[in-house]
Length: 351
Image (tube, rainbow, N blue to C red; front, side, top):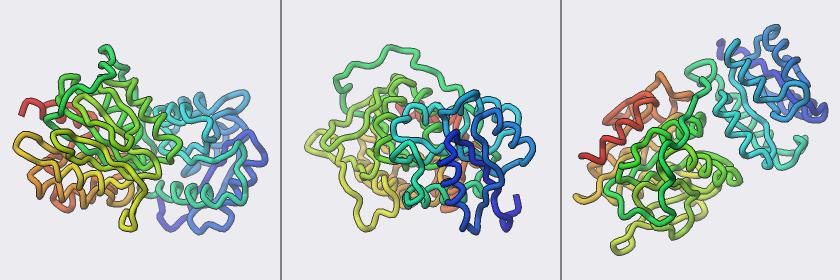
Protein backbone atom coordinates (compact mmCIF):
# COMPACT_ATOMS: atom_id res chain seq x y z
CA UNK A 1 0.00 0.00 0.00
CA UNK A 2 1.33 3.44 -0.92
CA UNK A 3 1.54 5.39 2.36
CA UNK A 4 1.06 8.71 0.52
CA UNK A 5 -2.10 7.60 -1.23
CA UNK A 6 -5.41 8.11 0.52
CA UNK A 7 -6.93 4.95 1.94
CA UNK A 8 -10.01 3.86 0.03
CA UNK A 9 -12.98 3.27 2.37
CA UNK A 10 -16.09 1.22 1.60
CA UNK A 11 -19.03 2.12 3.87
CA UNK A 12 -21.48 -0.73 4.52
CA UNK A 13 -24.66 0.18 6.40
CA UNK A 14 -28.36 -0.36 5.71
CA UNK A 15 -29.16 3.18 6.90
CA UNK A 16 -28.83 5.87 4.23
CA UNK A 17 -28.50 8.39 7.07
CA UNK A 18 -25.50 6.51 8.50
CA UNK A 19 -23.89 6.02 5.09
CA UNK A 20 -24.11 9.74 4.41
CA UNK A 21 -22.79 10.76 7.83
CA UNK A 22 -19.90 8.29 7.78
CA UNK A 23 -18.96 9.60 4.34
CA UNK A 24 -19.01 13.14 5.75
CA UNK A 25 -16.53 12.06 8.46
CA UNK A 26 -13.99 11.25 5.76
CA UNK A 27 -14.82 14.21 3.50
CA UNK A 28 -12.17 16.45 4.99
CA UNK A 29 -9.61 13.77 5.77
CA UNK A 30 -6.14 13.83 4.27
CA UNK A 31 -5.72 10.12 5.04
CA UNK A 32 -8.82 8.41 3.67
CA UNK A 33 -11.71 8.85 1.25
CA UNK A 34 -14.95 6.98 0.67
CA UNK A 35 -14.83 5.14 -2.65
CA UNK A 36 -18.11 3.27 -2.32
CA UNK A 37 -21.24 2.67 -0.23
CA UNK A 38 -23.34 -0.47 0.19
CA UNK A 39 -26.65 -1.06 1.94
CA UNK A 40 -26.25 -4.82 2.56
CA UNK A 41 -23.70 -7.62 2.43
CA UNK A 42 -24.53 -8.72 -1.11
CA UNK A 43 -23.91 -5.28 -2.56
CA UNK A 44 -20.80 -4.90 -0.38
CA UNK A 45 -19.23 -8.11 -1.74
CA UNK A 46 -19.75 -6.91 -5.30
CA UNK A 47 -18.17 -3.55 -4.52
CA UNK A 48 -15.23 -5.17 -2.71
CA UNK A 49 -14.42 -7.20 -5.84
CA UNK A 50 -14.86 -4.16 -8.07
CA UNK A 51 -13.25 -1.37 -5.98
CA UNK A 52 -10.72 -3.29 -3.84
CA UNK A 53 -11.02 -0.95 -0.83
CA UNK A 54 -8.22 -0.60 1.72
CA UNK A 55 -10.66 -0.70 4.63
CA UNK A 56 -14.36 -1.32 5.23
CA UNK A 57 -16.66 0.20 7.87
CA UNK A 58 -19.39 -2.30 8.66
CA UNK A 59 -22.81 -2.26 10.29
CA UNK A 60 -23.79 -5.74 11.53
CA UNK A 61 -27.58 -5.61 11.35
CA UNK A 62 -28.56 -5.50 7.67
CA UNK A 63 -31.25 -7.10 5.49
CA UNK A 64 -30.57 -9.85 2.92
CA UNK A 65 -26.99 -10.57 4.04
CA UNK A 66 -26.01 -9.51 7.55
CA UNK A 67 -22.58 -8.41 8.70
CA UNK A 68 -21.57 -11.83 10.05
CA UNK A 69 -22.24 -13.63 6.79
CA UNK A 70 -20.47 -10.85 4.92
CA UNK A 71 -17.40 -11.19 7.17
CA UNK A 72 -17.20 -14.96 6.69
CA UNK A 73 -17.33 -14.68 2.90
CA UNK A 74 -15.02 -11.64 2.77
CA UNK A 75 -12.29 -13.27 4.86
CA UNK A 76 -12.45 -16.43 2.78
CA UNK A 77 -12.40 -14.73 -0.62
CA UNK A 78 -10.71 -11.33 -0.29
CA UNK A 79 -9.44 -10.57 3.24
CA UNK A 80 -9.75 -6.84 3.89
CA UNK A 81 -9.45 -4.82 7.11
CA UNK A 82 -12.91 -4.26 8.62
CA UNK A 83 -13.90 -1.81 11.36
CA UNK A 84 -17.31 -2.48 12.87
CA UNK A 85 -19.46 0.58 13.63
CA UNK A 86 -21.81 -0.62 16.34
CA UNK A 87 -24.27 0.64 18.90
CA UNK A 88 -23.72 -0.08 22.60
CA UNK A 89 -26.67 -2.49 22.48
CA UNK A 90 -24.70 -4.82 20.17
CA UNK A 91 -21.85 -5.66 22.56
CA UNK A 92 -22.01 -9.45 22.09
CA UNK A 93 -22.27 -9.03 18.32
CA UNK A 94 -19.15 -6.86 18.26
CA UNK A 95 -17.01 -9.58 19.82
CA UNK A 96 -18.48 -12.19 17.50
CA UNK A 97 -17.47 -9.97 14.56
CA UNK A 98 -13.94 -9.61 15.91
CA UNK A 99 -13.64 -13.39 16.11
CA UNK A 100 -14.76 -13.57 12.48
CA UNK A 101 -11.92 -11.30 11.39
CA UNK A 102 -12.85 -7.64 12.00
CA UNK A 103 -9.80 -5.75 13.27
CA UNK A 104 -11.55 -3.32 15.61
CA UNK A 105 -14.78 -1.50 16.36
CA UNK A 106 -16.15 1.98 17.01
CA UNK A 107 -19.04 2.36 19.42
CA UNK A 108 -21.78 4.85 18.69
CA UNK A 109 -24.19 5.85 21.48
CA UNK A 110 -27.34 5.51 19.40
CA UNK A 111 -28.58 3.49 16.44
CA UNK A 112 -27.67 6.32 14.07
CA UNK A 113 -24.25 7.88 13.52
CA UNK A 114 -24.87 11.53 14.40
CA UNK A 115 -22.97 14.05 12.27
CA UNK A 116 -22.10 16.06 15.40
CA UNK A 117 -20.66 12.97 17.14
CA UNK A 118 -17.10 14.26 17.61
CA UNK A 119 -15.99 11.23 19.61
CA UNK A 120 -17.15 8.80 16.93
CA UNK A 121 -15.57 10.93 14.22
CA UNK A 122 -12.17 11.11 15.93
CA UNK A 123 -12.12 7.43 16.85
CA UNK A 124 -13.17 6.23 13.41
CA UNK A 125 -10.53 8.35 11.67
CA UNK A 126 -7.84 7.10 14.07
CA UNK A 127 -8.76 3.46 13.56
CA UNK A 128 -8.89 3.77 9.79
CA UNK A 129 -5.40 5.31 9.87
CA UNK A 130 -4.20 2.22 11.75
CA UNK A 131 -4.73 0.20 8.58
CA UNK A 132 -1.38 1.52 7.33
CA UNK A 133 0.29 -0.18 10.28
CA UNK A 134 -1.29 -3.62 9.92
CA UNK A 135 1.22 -6.42 9.56
CA UNK A 136 -1.15 -8.30 7.27
CA UNK A 137 -4.22 -7.49 5.21
CA UNK A 138 -6.67 -8.58 7.90
CA UNK A 139 -6.70 -10.90 10.89
CA UNK A 140 -7.68 -14.47 10.29
CA UNK A 141 -10.90 -15.60 11.86
CA UNK A 142 -9.90 -17.71 14.84
CA UNK A 143 -11.63 -20.81 16.06
CA UNK A 144 -11.35 -20.38 19.81
CA UNK A 145 -11.87 -23.49 21.86
CA UNK A 146 -14.79 -23.42 24.29
CA UNK A 147 -14.17 -24.33 27.91
CA UNK A 148 -13.44 -28.08 28.13
CA UNK A 149 -13.52 -28.27 31.92
CA UNK A 150 -16.28 -27.32 34.34
CA UNK A 151 -16.13 -23.69 35.44
CA UNK A 152 -14.26 -23.13 38.67
CA UNK A 153 -16.02 -22.40 41.92
CA UNK A 154 -17.24 -18.87 42.48
CA UNK A 155 -15.03 -18.80 45.60
CA UNK A 156 -11.43 -17.55 45.25
CA UNK A 157 -8.92 -20.31 44.55
CA UNK A 158 -6.17 -19.17 46.91
CA UNK A 159 -3.21 -16.84 46.64
CA UNK A 160 -1.43 -17.11 43.26
CA UNK A 161 2.22 -18.05 42.95
CA UNK A 162 2.42 -16.09 39.68
CA UNK A 163 0.86 -12.75 38.65
CA UNK A 164 0.63 -12.04 34.92
CA UNK A 165 -0.12 -8.57 33.59
CA UNK A 166 -1.27 -8.33 29.97
CA UNK A 167 -1.19 -5.26 27.71
CA UNK A 168 -3.19 -5.21 24.46
CA UNK A 169 -4.97 -2.87 22.07
CA UNK A 170 -5.96 -3.21 18.38
CA UNK A 171 -6.43 -6.92 17.67
CA UNK A 172 -6.29 -7.62 21.39
CA UNK A 173 -9.80 -8.99 22.05
CA UNK A 174 -9.30 -11.90 19.66
CA UNK A 175 -5.73 -12.44 20.85
CA UNK A 176 -6.88 -12.55 24.48
CA UNK A 177 -9.60 -15.08 23.64
CA UNK A 178 -6.87 -17.26 22.14
CA UNK A 179 -4.64 -16.94 25.21
CA UNK A 180 -7.34 -17.56 27.82
CA UNK A 181 -8.75 -20.54 25.92
CA UNK A 182 -5.35 -22.27 26.11
CA UNK A 183 -4.23 -21.52 29.67
CA UNK A 184 -3.76 -24.62 31.78
CA UNK A 185 -6.44 -24.94 34.50
CA UNK A 186 -3.63 -25.97 36.87
CA UNK A 187 -1.63 -22.78 36.36
CA UNK A 188 -1.39 -21.17 39.85
CA UNK A 189 -1.63 -17.68 38.41
CA UNK A 190 -3.78 -14.58 38.30
CA UNK A 191 -4.04 -12.77 34.95
CA UNK A 192 -4.73 -9.04 34.88
CA UNK A 193 -5.62 -7.39 31.57
CA UNK A 194 -5.37 -3.80 30.36
CA UNK A 195 -7.18 -3.81 27.00
CA UNK A 196 -7.89 -0.47 25.30
CA UNK A 197 -11.68 -0.63 25.01
CA UNK A 198 -14.75 1.58 25.65
CA UNK A 199 -16.15 1.33 29.17
CA UNK A 200 -19.51 -0.16 28.26
CA UNK A 201 -17.85 -3.13 26.55
CA UNK A 202 -15.31 -4.36 29.10
CA UNK A 203 -17.78 -6.28 31.27
CA UNK A 204 -19.24 -8.09 28.26
CA UNK A 205 -15.71 -8.84 27.06
CA UNK A 206 -14.77 -10.29 30.47
CA UNK A 207 -17.87 -12.49 30.33
CA UNK A 208 -16.84 -13.72 26.89
CA UNK A 209 -13.34 -14.57 28.13
CA UNK A 210 -14.91 -16.35 31.10
CA UNK A 211 -16.77 -18.72 28.77
CA UNK A 212 -13.69 -19.64 26.72
CA UNK A 213 -11.22 -21.14 29.15
CA UNK A 214 -10.67 -22.74 32.53
CA UNK A 215 -9.99 -19.45 34.32
CA UNK A 216 -12.88 -17.55 35.87
CA UNK A 217 -12.74 -14.04 34.37
CA UNK A 218 -14.51 -10.92 35.62
CA UNK A 219 -14.33 -7.17 35.12
CA UNK A 220 -12.06 -5.92 37.90
CA UNK A 221 -13.60 -3.85 40.68
CA UNK A 222 -12.08 -1.78 43.48
CA UNK A 223 -11.00 -4.02 46.36
CA UNK A 224 -11.43 -7.35 44.56
CA UNK A 225 -9.42 -10.17 46.11
CA UNK A 226 -6.95 -11.45 43.51
CA UNK A 227 -6.88 -15.25 43.44
CA UNK A 228 -5.27 -18.04 41.45
CA UNK A 229 -6.98 -19.37 38.30
CA UNK A 230 -8.71 -16.02 37.94
CA UNK A 231 -8.59 -13.30 35.28
CA UNK A 232 -9.47 -9.63 35.74
CA UNK A 233 -10.19 -7.13 32.95
CA UNK A 234 -9.63 -3.45 33.67
CA UNK A 235 -12.90 -1.49 33.39
CA UNK A 236 -13.05 0.92 30.46
CA UNK A 237 -12.24 4.60 31.18
CA UNK A 238 -10.43 3.50 34.34
CA UNK A 239 -6.98 2.26 35.29
CA UNK A 240 -6.29 -0.84 37.37
CA UNK A 241 -3.45 -1.82 39.69
CA UNK A 242 -2.70 -4.76 41.95
CA UNK A 243 -1.53 -4.05 45.48
CA UNK A 244 -0.53 -6.06 48.52
CA UNK A 245 -2.81 -5.60 51.54
CA UNK A 246 -1.36 -7.57 54.42
CA UNK A 247 -1.15 -11.16 53.22
CA UNK A 248 -3.65 -10.61 50.42
CA UNK A 249 -3.51 -9.24 46.87
CA UNK A 250 -6.24 -6.74 45.99
CA UNK A 251 -7.27 -4.68 42.97
CA UNK A 252 -7.27 -0.92 42.91
CA UNK A 253 -9.33 0.75 40.20
CA UNK A 254 -10.02 4.40 39.52
CA UNK A 255 -9.89 7.35 37.17
CA UNK A 256 -6.73 7.85 35.09
CA UNK A 257 -4.08 10.29 36.28
CA UNK A 258 -2.50 13.11 34.35
CA UNK A 259 0.48 10.90 33.47
CA UNK A 260 -1.61 8.07 32.01
CA UNK A 261 -1.26 8.42 28.25
CA UNK A 262 -3.65 5.55 27.53
CA UNK A 263 -6.81 4.45 29.31
CA UNK A 264 -6.82 1.75 30.53
CA UNK A 265 -3.09 2.15 31.15
CA UNK A 266 -1.01 -0.98 30.56
CA UNK A 267 2.05 0.81 31.93
CA UNK A 268 0.34 1.50 35.24
CA UNK A 269 -0.91 -2.09 35.51
CA UNK A 270 2.47 -3.63 34.68
CA UNK A 271 4.33 -1.32 37.07
CA UNK A 272 2.05 -2.45 39.88
CA UNK A 273 2.71 -6.08 38.96
CA UNK A 274 6.46 -5.40 39.08
CA UNK A 275 6.18 -4.12 42.65
CA UNK A 276 4.92 -7.53 43.80
CA UNK A 277 8.03 -9.44 42.74
CA UNK A 278 9.28 -11.54 45.66
CA UNK A 279 10.87 -14.95 46.27
CA UNK A 280 7.45 -16.51 46.86
CA UNK A 281 5.68 -14.70 44.01
CA UNK A 282 6.78 -14.61 40.37
CA UNK A 283 5.67 -11.82 38.05
CA UNK A 284 5.34 -11.74 34.27
CA UNK A 285 4.32 -9.13 31.73
CA UNK A 286 2.79 -10.00 28.36
CA UNK A 287 2.56 -7.40 25.60
CA UNK A 288 0.20 -8.29 22.76
CA UNK A 289 -0.84 -6.58 19.53
CA UNK A 290 -1.54 -2.86 19.54
CA UNK A 291 -0.55 0.56 18.23
CA UNK A 292 1.85 2.80 20.14
CA UNK A 293 4.05 1.79 23.06
CA UNK A 294 1.74 1.38 26.05
CA UNK A 295 3.32 -1.35 28.18
CA UNK A 296 6.91 -0.43 27.37
CA UNK A 297 7.61 1.36 30.66
CA UNK A 298 5.74 -1.34 32.55
CA UNK A 299 7.75 -4.08 30.86
CA UNK A 300 10.95 -2.31 31.86
CA UNK A 301 9.79 -2.19 35.49
CA UNK A 302 9.04 -5.92 35.45
CA UNK A 303 12.48 -6.76 34.05
CA UNK A 304 14.18 -4.52 36.62
CA UNK A 305 12.25 -6.35 39.35
CA UNK A 306 13.53 -9.69 38.10
CA UNK A 307 10.33 -10.78 36.35
CA UNK A 308 9.76 -12.17 32.86
CA UNK A 309 8.45 -10.28 29.82
CA UNK A 310 6.79 -11.97 26.84
CA UNK A 311 6.12 -10.07 23.60
CA UNK A 312 3.91 -11.25 20.76
CA UNK A 313 5.96 -11.80 17.62
CA UNK A 314 5.59 -9.82 14.43
CA UNK A 315 4.30 -12.86 12.55
CA UNK A 316 1.03 -12.99 14.50
CA UNK A 317 0.47 -9.43 15.80
CA UNK A 318 -2.24 -7.54 13.95
CA UNK A 319 -0.41 -4.30 14.81
CA UNK A 320 3.21 -4.69 15.92
CA UNK A 321 3.52 -1.31 17.66
CA UNK A 322 3.28 -2.29 21.35
CA UNK A 323 5.14 -5.61 21.26
CA UNK A 324 7.62 -4.21 18.73
CA UNK A 325 8.54 -1.38 21.10
CA UNK A 326 9.29 -3.90 23.85
CA UNK A 327 11.39 -6.07 21.53
CA UNK A 328 13.37 -3.13 20.15
CA UNK A 329 14.15 -2.00 23.70
CA UNK A 330 15.62 -5.42 24.47
CA UNK A 331 13.11 -6.08 27.26
CA UNK A 332 11.51 -9.32 26.03
CA UNK A 333 12.70 -12.60 27.54
CA UNK A 334 10.54 -14.41 25.01
CA UNK A 335 9.18 -13.33 21.62
CA UNK A 336 6.46 -15.78 20.64
CA UNK A 337 3.61 -16.09 18.14
CA UNK A 338 0.19 -15.87 19.69
CA UNK A 339 -0.44 -19.61 19.39
CA UNK A 340 2.51 -20.36 21.70
CA UNK A 341 2.11 -17.69 24.37
CA UNK A 342 -0.45 -19.52 26.52
CA UNK A 343 1.57 -22.73 26.36
CA UNK A 344 4.65 -20.86 27.55
CA UNK A 345 2.72 -19.19 30.39
CA UNK A 346 1.30 -22.54 31.43
CA UNK A 347 4.83 -23.86 31.97
CA UNK A 348 5.66 -21.09 34.43
CA UNK A 349 3.67 -22.70 37.23
CA UNK A 350 6.20 -25.49 37.37
CA UNK A 351 9.15 -23.11 37.75
